[in-house]
Image 1 (spheres, rainbow, N blue to C red):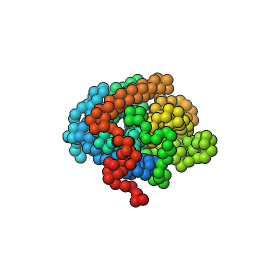
Image 2 (image 1 turned 180 degrees about the vertical axis):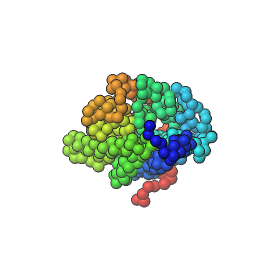
Image 3 (image 1 turned 135 degrees about the horizontal axis):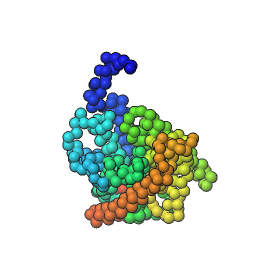
Image 4 (image 1 turned 60 degrees about the horizontal axis):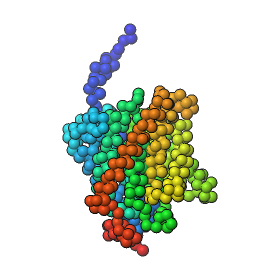
Length: 426
């Protein structure tokens, strides 16, 4: 029998105490990831969206992103976190952490402080309603946006988050539940569906589709896009909740999918319209990032390459179909990029997560057919629930304050009408 030294014996006898201590490496990584995800909304998404709208509405979009960062943080603190991540209900959580009651410096969530976990998840709760802004940009009242977003967070985002990540019914389907590593279902499908419901409910902007509405400041948009790309390392890599190999692989596949999505969209645009555009490149990047999100902790590099290529191609076709054929004014293409990307990525996770695909294998021992069925149930349930509740909330806010600004106010621009400010001195 091999002799055990005193030091090893001391280590073994002290393990229960060590298990109650947060891992410093994991904690440092989650704190860093939290900052990266917040950076995605302010300033990343704010600048990305701000450059895409007309110059008379740029401040309104920046203001919406900033105000949502504040309000969603307070709602998450008050009740959102508790309903999403405590309790064992199939459809909604409990009230154990209302106002973060009982949360102390010693509270742990796996190997990290629970305060770090709650804050990390808060940044997801911030960016998801902010993504929806792109669906109704340039025409929704600020007051209506605040009311709708608040109710939407509590009645759509929080329940779906609990279903998938908080132990709810979608996490219990099949052998593994719905596989959504970083938010394909929870973030991108919910935001994309809500955005197109909002676009349909509010109606198109004045002049759409006859009047061209090009981005007013592409350098602003490209700057924001770069911030989104970098921030997404925290979004996906941080979702591992450790600083180990899972986080590193999630970051690697995230980068590959973003690059493939951007270049595929660029080429598709070049073939169809004779010239590649900067707008197409950054939109393809976002498509690649959104599509890899649910798969990022499960797939390998080769699988990520395929996911990124499909994201760039399919989201490109979806964007043109929604805008040109259906003539739906989803102002900043939230549904065809985030919604379609989230749906595509969630389904492809059921394929490329499998470790039985040779070069394209992922990291999981799953039966592809069975897991695809589970993924499809998650997609359909989330689309249906989000669409119905979002439509009801928009009807409610319209009855309370009116969703849309008056025609003459829309012509003048939301910056002056709603905030009495101009983005530029002209």
